[in-house]
Image (tube, rainbow over all chains, first blue to last red; front, side):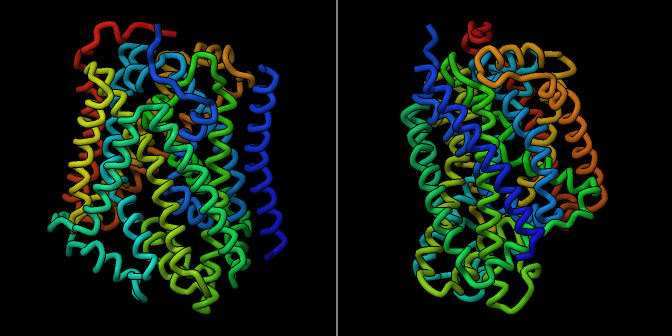
Length: 35
Length: 498
């Protein structure tokens, strides 16, 4: 794989899956605080 | 007392919304769209579209459903009596989609069974169009019923309507709690296997290698907005209907972020799996990956069977897993699509849920038999193209323009979302909905219309496209208007509930 492809793979996965992880963690944190 | 059915848990709602968004398009549309529009560079416009249109519209629809607590027509009617027709138009679009979407799931179900003996043989294209679909010679010919499509189609409808009769909590929520985790696990197994195949890295390189020269091309940005728009189940009544079943104290904004990012996360996973497998196929055939890239029905039912044939071991098992993934992704979406008109009929005509499922689902399932005939693929192709380009996209444009510019309700809806959500919406949300989304969708519509008028879609005869494409898309608007003119059977239904 070329370096540019590896970089884009990391950026793409990082932003999208990172965004998902951050949203889920935020929801779990708020649910725990509410208890 | 509010006796509207409700989701049992927040996770139940999110899984149902994700199940609706994650459908066949995630697996067979996104990978090729990304590749054709700059590869890795496509992620930039794609993310921009997700954050400026996808998630903002999801928040808008979640807010409308949650605030007005009704099916899409009822929610629009409570927003403003004069906009009920938009709800019915979107419901009519869902109705049309349900009639052919069920048939594609039926094909996938049949192919899951075919996988065990690799029934498709070496000529997978010949098998699909000849042996399996027994395709009519020309578009417009109905031909006879194809039993190998009709039998799984009956099963698809029995499962879908069975889930819907069971209700929101015991039916839709339970089904999605089974389908979505199973889909993710099965798809992860496929992706991991695909990544370990010879040629997988070449496939990934083709998929992720950025072509930055494409970024300045307006068509790439339109493709990115189109991908986000068509894959998120927005503008055809689903998310409004689903969010109307949320309890009053429910977060809206973060639920939309989770749903939007989950859908995109699955799309990226699908891109990795599909291009790893395509890289393997290219390596086996000794050709560049670019030569084997395909999308849609061809990718799933012609190219993937070829890939499955060439796997070094456990061909049948991986074939079964792949087509079962399509079945699960399709069923969770179909359930949400049918729920839109089940809820609409139930409220408009004040009938029980079971009766509504039998009437709405019954009519849709009967019409779907047309797509299980020898000419079915032609009808399906035309209806799908026009209902997407001139149904969903146009309904989305009308939705944001009416809410943002005609009724000027964006601030009120923002207030409602902020009252119940952790993440507070600011001016960025209003700008996305009032300016960016209408501009992009408006340009998309203009571009679609120009392309359509310059060359007939798919090379089909004009008469065929008018009857099964244009009239279907126009019919959805007419049906929407006619239904909105009919008085509600339940006289108190229109009262404000927020």
